[in-house]
Length: 343
Figure 1 (spheres, rainbow, N blue to C red):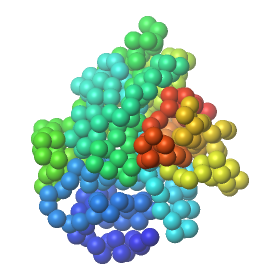
Figure 2: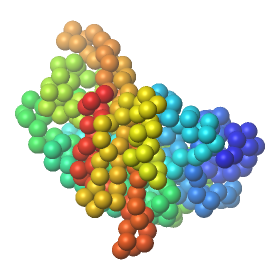
Figure 3: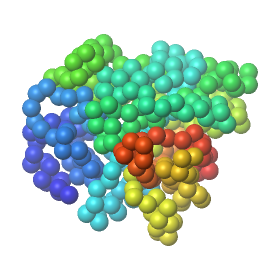
């Protein structure tokens, strides 16, 4: 595994330059040093490929999650200290299929920039117990080595009238972080599959800006209504569209989960197994974060709530294709969502 200093010395590498433009040299170096990077993403020439921008986006989101989730940072530090790297399988986010102000509703708020980065919907996963639907966005150029995005959306129209009203109040204030310059850069990537470096940086920074809370801090009364009916909706009320989790792909998730439990990590009690038996997942329970809430008199009060978390997955070979099974599973996803409920 290359050291931070070795990566810093290679300032001409396109992926490093992209990531550095978004998160700074030191964070870019440490992040790329701990992630397994496909050699196809290397190089320093022009133009910049959509796959390179996609990987830079994932690496920046990975770095951000480590800043917000101490247990995830602890795990990644242990990997780094062992001289190993992480196969970054996928990340996830949650969206609102309902009134979202200036922000496009549901998964389309992210599909609009994931498609120009070479992503397409590879699977649709109903989550009826959660009143949600998940979509797996897979990168077409390097599907096994550029992380997927699991984008879920909460169907507001399936909630009670009180919860629908709370959603409209909370999420109706959302702003759209993408401006004309970002949209123009994404259009070039969409049309040509590549773009100039400065356009790539503009597209990358625009995409990154979408992973956050775009609405005003929620009223405590609205949050309590959502919490009583949809804990996922309550999570989005405080965290917005933040990167919900990042996922390590490992050869034996069951054994790894036992090792992490022995090391004192607050693990999900069980491993989720897909119906076809080829996909197995578990996670560390979400870390607590402190977020502001508005009270009736307009004052803000900080309260602890569940934040983001870190996940682990094992994928077997699909015997029909001879390739890695990149699918997800509705039952697995529903079980994994519980780690923000049980934090």
